[in-house]
Amino acid sequence: MILPVYIYGSPVLRKTAEYIDKDYPELQQFIADLWETMYHADGVGLAAPQVGKSIRIFVVDASVYSEQEPKLLGFKKTFINAEIYERFGEEEFFNEGCLSIPGIHEDVKRPTKIKMRYMDENFVEHDEEFDGHAARIIQHEYDHLDGVMFVDRLSALRKTLIKNKLNSMAKGKYRADYKSKLVK
Ligand code: NI
Image: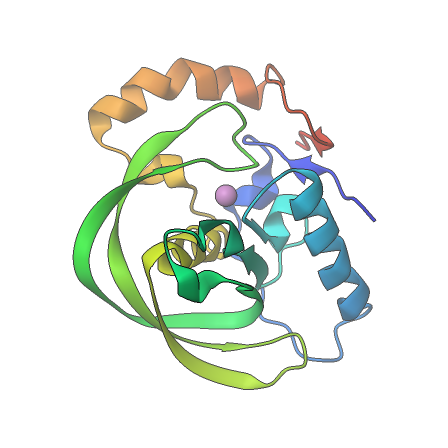
């Protein structure tokens, strides 16, 4: 089922999300809904708080970047209760967007490599290193679990420049070509 994407200004996007266990009700259906919602909106990642559920799950499909990074062919993963325990490598800028912040794209600086523990959709534990586009998308989605959005990571100047747009968005003035809602 396609779920509405919660838009900037919705308080759930600012909450710290809860850890879950495998008995979480209707978890598999929810994960399927996350995928469907993400693809419907042409996203490469989606975190549960973005559909109004404050739990620590996100999905990432980085395969659109496989032309530049062949190892990303078929990269499609569900991350549950993830912990990034190391961020390293150079810091780089990359132009990011977010389904919860339609119409705004900004260069965001992040480390290029991460080490992370997480559970997949079957609650099997993994401990892996990611780099390149995968590390970029994962860090963006992971931020959502802590109520952080990419616009928080911009310079003071860039923040000032987009402030009015964000304020209008939080009042319902935005356009998205996918199902969305602002929930106060
Ligand atoms: Ni986002």
